[in-house]
Length: 350
Image 1 (cartoon, rainbow, N blue to C red):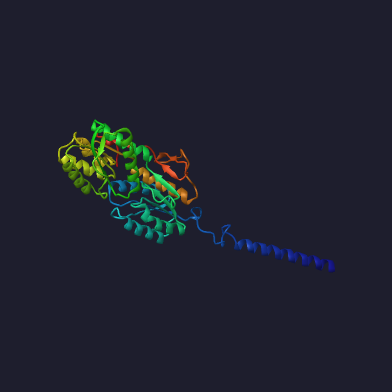
Image 2: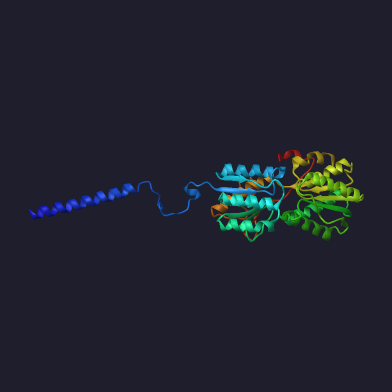
């Protein structure tokens, strides 16, 4: 009898243990392995990345095309893209845009600075909030960016524009002028430096009639400044124009004065804007790249950066092609420039 009682007690204890284990299993059913651990959300857990792309300004064709590419990348890659910037090429306005993005707690800010030095403090604050910082189109302060997306090799581009101007002038001597967008735009200044270096080294007969002339990223200003140049320097033979609207304004002035074939204009312009001026020779050549592809690449690399992945040299990016990563491992070059002429401008939809 005692032996039987002992067996019953043992069975009751085993049964109780089984019930306890089942209860614990049911309570934890459906919980993730790190539930309750306080781990931050991630793309794997359902959070959608928020990537902010900030151009120098909104509302001009170049940055409109970049916006189209950036938003296509967002749709393709499943991330939220906020494309926002100032209405003028103004650093103070850009700072306010970035401050607003910090308050929105975006994951990445990719900016094309109007004035790199002016943006450094606000970009540092963003970085302190855990936001990844990139630049695109125009370099920012290298000490605050984790990735820099450049359209082309700056030296090649700058030297090519000088070579192209000489080709279109038909001579390597004579007076030339230089228009730019904003005086503090880092990318434009870098290209101009290389263009002038190419002139000094290869074409010593070229004479720059003045220092670079700012046009404030406005076609009308470029037009008026070119009219002033043509009046002040009647022997002017060529104009280099930087920023996508400056070549159009310069060509408009040459067209108005009937100086096609006498004053060559070469610059960084979009094919759709250039077509009427290329057709009659008031714009001799436009060199650029696909700004839509640049916007796409920026968002694609921003997504990777947010997920802890860095680009590699020769990497194939959908809708862009193979990219080059420089030796610093954070500077990406999209590809070589494209020349738009009256013969091929219709082939490009931007």
